[in-house]
Amino acid sequence: MRVFVAGATGAVGRRLLPLLLEGGHEVIAATRRPEELAKLGVPGVLLDLLDRDAVLAAVRNVQPDAVVHQVTDLANRDLEANARVRITGTRNLVDAARSAGVRRMMAQSIAFAYAPGQGPAPESDPLHLDAPPPRRRTVEGVVALEKVVAEMPEGVILRYGTLYGEGTWYAPDGAVAESVRAGRLRATSGVTSFLHVDDAAHAAVAALDWPAGVVNIVDDEPAPGTEWVPYLAALLGAPPPPRTGRAEPWERGATNARARNELGWTPRWASWRNGFCKLFG
Ligand SMILES: NC(=O)c1ccc[n+]([C@@H]2O[C@H](COP(=O)([O-])OP(=O)(O)OC[C@H]3O[C@@H](n4cnc5c(N)ncnc54)[C@H](OP(=O)(O)O)[C@@H]3O)[C@@H](O)[C@H]2O)c1
Image (cartoon, rainbow, N blue to C red; front, side, top):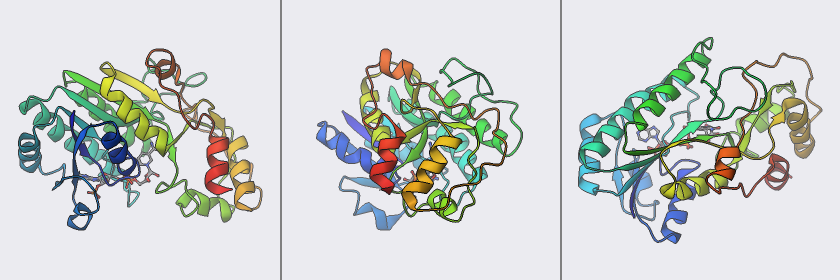
């Protein structure tokens, strides 16, 4: 397949390109940064998803069979910028794909936008539309992205768990490790479903053959902060974390039952414990 990848330089995107090439696909990748073009290892185009005319022209020129959307804008921890690229950037990309006759898109969403509820969330649970700010803005971005991708004839929405691995906030040089070392991260009962970035990339490749719809891509072991924060602190040689603080009702994790049972996807890093051990140990 001829695959156009937006977000090719990101934590997931840069792992995705070699996997697509190994799978025999032809890859054209996008970045906003001229200095990244030569490093992509595949033909590249300079593209800002917020520049509608440029997006329309780029996809028309490339004429891909499928588009992969791995764009987020959290490098500066700016939730508004991230919501903007999810809302406006995705609108532009979907319109460009449809006007170029592309049928298929795989897009990155998140598995932690669900409304409060009991236990790890399945895809059928509602998203947290009435969340308080600033979470509400994140959920609005996710809802807009998913709604627009669903306009594609074949839109696959990958709701990723909390990403860890090199290049993410959960890396030895990342913000979360720094916060654990400083004793700032609290161990609450709030539950997180993690996802190794390699598993995120593998799922995006597998999704080239998946039916349209929404699927949680998370590991097998939703983890309360009371387990994973002390575990991480021990791996980092940091002091035991404070056990004060309240869990948010929406911190419930997500289940990968649909990905496993209906789509045959299994995480290579089935438990964050093994993944953390390899990464931080
Ligand atoms: N599920 C999760 O847990 C999750 C999801 C997202 C982010 N995060 C965390 O946040 C960290 C930093 O996030 P990040 O957003 O910088 O993610 P990233 O995956 O490291 O990179 C974002 C990608 O989006 C591209 N991009 C951003 N804005 C764009 C735009 N307007 N037009 C076209 N491409 C655009 C960037 O390309 P260029 O800069 O090359 O143009 C880059 O390829 C991650 O490493 C991760 O720890 C977590």
